[in-house]
Length: 420
Image (cartoon, rainbow, N blue to C red; front, side, top):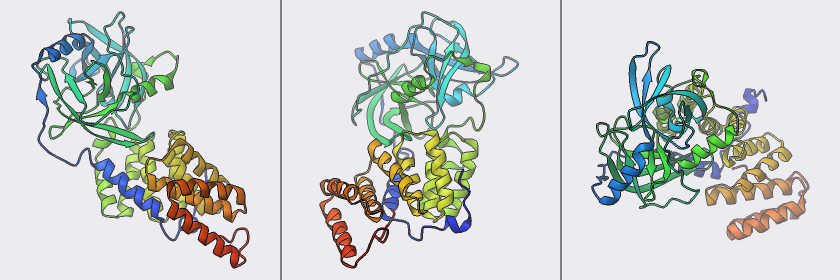
């Protein structure tokens, strides 16, 4: 691991434009699903279609009851089977609430949860194994692009938990690729529905509602997260439930007591307080790529490049195929005078795909600058051609700067390199 010192940390004197742009966009995107307390616009369905959805869905739904070491029921949530061999999905905090977990089926069976498949702590989702076979189960929707205003529904596991079926639409989709995705709906959600499936009109699972908030409509994590957990674990047998990972907080990341204050500190441009709070979050969520990516952003805003590099490296380790941590690590390396390593990571981030157009164009601008400074004329020209297709004016301005530098007799390494 790189050992940064204070001189190294203060290596970047000016935070560049794309970082500011992405930082602002990321903050708004992170806050948008939780910043409003508007009325719950969903409805309790009474149609024949909703009745059919309840009939087809409920056999696969489970009431999950957490038991302490004395066998006493403490808390409950919802889960659902996704395979006939007893593989089920729920919210991580439901699975972690107590020492043991029991699944209550619609026909009154009590099934002990005995296995742990995997989890996503940022999205608050867990995939578990119940001691059961021949289980009715729900189909996971294919990877399709969800659309706003698309119809969706929540079916309750029991009538005393919530109305049998509540419907609404997808209001918005917040996406930080590879780090965090949230599907906001207009459907009311109630206590005990944490871990419920968000259903399409076909009755397929399009998301998981990981937590309950009395002031908000249902916010779901995409079904792709469930598929990623299963794919990550491969064909390995489930871990005993009693030995499941239990380090850090049992709360969802977004309900962590320091996470929201850290976002508030972002908005105030209080980098010192934001960094202090995010470091505390990171101790409770040591496997959260989102937390370490945000920490790297804050440290870069405060010109602490050595620290930002280490945070970005950790985010890359946790989520190696995600563009933003690669981009941040590449910028840090270029800033510290390691252009070859930095270029590799910048190009990796661009290959994976950056969400924001301005961020993408600025990344290609930086690639062109660094390649030119390295004397790699062909690679610099190729980057400029791509930049011309994305932003002709930015490419024209950069060509003029390169030409001025050559006219002045600037040689290799003398091209001004402005990081983001």
